[in-house]
Length: 313
Image 1 (cartoon, rainbow, N blue to C red):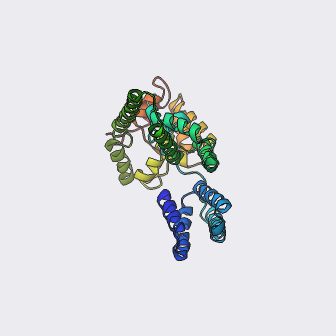
Image 2 (image 1 turned 90 degrees about the vertical axis):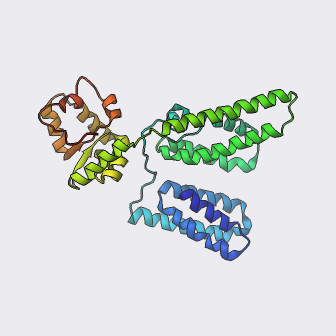
């Protein structure tokens, strides 16, 4: 939705009709309501436009002022978060490259083509802002895996530049040229099919969704659900219940307490920790069962009389 509003705003802004130019303010201001980082990107884009588009400087300056004012209101009145929510807990490389198990990454072949494209366009001054934008997004990727969507757009652009360069260059051996393109196309096709095959079996599956909906329909709205960090947003959305990881703003504190709970060795200790955090339901997925300690801790203590299995899929 952010990209749609952004493209619509720029489309209207590039028209010769001044009425349409000012109409672009509406979708651009609507794009401010997602999160602070997206707004910062938007302001940076217009800052770049203010430097290069001298004829439209009054309108661009007006848009920048309105964006800043609206963002200040969002932060002060609506407590807008700065980074977008991440629906998966993956490291930088894994979330960026689809072949490494990413939920929404980029093909390794596309990345290789993009690196070649970077070397081709490196001396072009017009691409300077794009380099800075890519570096900023890569840094933000360490904090939110949702940045991969924007990164993939820029990477695809550079990959396309590389692809066009290969096509337009004169090859001394046409057979090698055809063979190279065949390898590239097969690599992209193979990585895409692999990704589609994996993503079709990705979380949340029907069993997960059914269980979370059961929690929503059969537990009081005040119940706090204990689960892993990667399930936090799914619990908040499908079960409509607060997740343990959403209780505290300090992520380091939450992680520490989560590790303390899953590592408890005595039933009394675990019950006490759950009572302290007012946890009523423990939501376990097959992935959690694989990752949690098998011989001690949460999984072994759940088999005691202190706990009851209320639902299973």
